[in-house]
Every structure is written in C-alpha cells, then in structure tokens.
Amino acid sequence: MRRPKGKLPVFNRGGFTLVELLVALAVTGVVLSAVATLAYALSSANDAADDTSYKQAQLRYATLRISQLIRHCKLICCATNDDFAIWRADDNNDKQINIAELVYIERGLARDHLQFTEFPSSNGSVINLSSIQARATNWWSAYSSEASFTQLIPQCSNVQFSFDALPPRGKLVNISFNLVENGIVHQYQISTRLRGWAGNLLNTPGTGLVSDDD
Image (cartoon, rainbow, N blue to C red; front, side):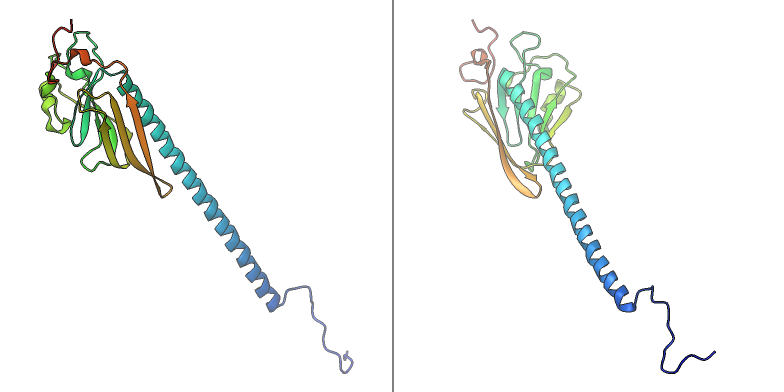
C-alpha cells in the first residue's frame, strides 16, 4: 500500500523529548540539592545541640561536686600555680590531717582542665599543714602509694583560682574558666564558701594545726 502524498508517517508520541528530559533532570537536581542542604543543616543543628547539652552536663556535674566539697570541707590547706589542696573532712576525728582526707582541685600546667585528685591508700600518718605542697611534686608518696583522678571538665581554658584570703585562712573560693560550646567561647564561674571552717585549729601564724583547740 502506498501512503497518500504529502503525509508524514505517524510515530508513537507517548515518550519524552530530549528537551523535556533535560528540564526534568534540571528540576530533579535542584530538588535534590535543596534536600541535601536541608539535611546538612539539620545534622549541624543536631550536632550543635548535642555539643551544648554535653558541655552543660559537664558544667552542672563540676559545679555540684566542687560546691559540695568546698562547702563541707575543713580547710583550704594551700594553693599553688596549678592546684589547691583541701582538707575534705576529719574522718577519724583526731583534729589532724592525713593523706586520705586530702583532695586536690587541679587545673594543669596549661590551665585547660579541672579534676579532683585523691589518695585512697594511706599509712595513717599525721601530715603537717606546712608540708602540703603542689601535687605534682609527689610529696604525698611518703604517705600514700597511689593517687586517683576524677575528671570534672576535661576540656576548658584559662582556668583561674581566687580566694578571699590566702589559704589556709581563706573561706571563699572562686573558680573561673572558659568553655567552648558550639564554636562560641563562654565564661563561667563557680563560687562557694566553707560552712564549717576549722580555723580554730590553726596555730597563730597559720602554718600548722594545734593539738587541742581548748
């Protein structure tokens, strides 16, 4: 059979033309790009929220532990460049200090962390107040065979200690530091005061404890 003159063959027109496919691909690319951007933004927001929550939890923990320790301690025995030593309690009620009753609050050489240092093993010997030095000097090794560490804030900066009076006569402690949260530096301060200061046990120059406060 012959087709009539002047008429072109008719093809199936149910598919897409090349131009339509290109347009569809371009639109799809824009949509996928928007979805990827939104997903990244949500992921970044979640990471920022997680970082802030984690740092705030550390801050609450450190504030509670430090405040309780200082509030109920007997004396702030000494302060050095990197730490200060606290007579936590008179466990055996002998009105004297032994190594198991001491706790250090440390900031490190770089002043970039806060931690407790304690001495769980002890030979029970009485320690002279004037003998207590920086923990890093290892003076305590004559009284205890080990030291244990509790991280309070493992990553901070510019940690500063200040007191209302030089230890052991100080009663008010301020600890300030910087903490980076979600890329932004925030400054915090922990302030607390001794409630049961054992100043009655200090000798006149404040270099040691008397054997009897009567």
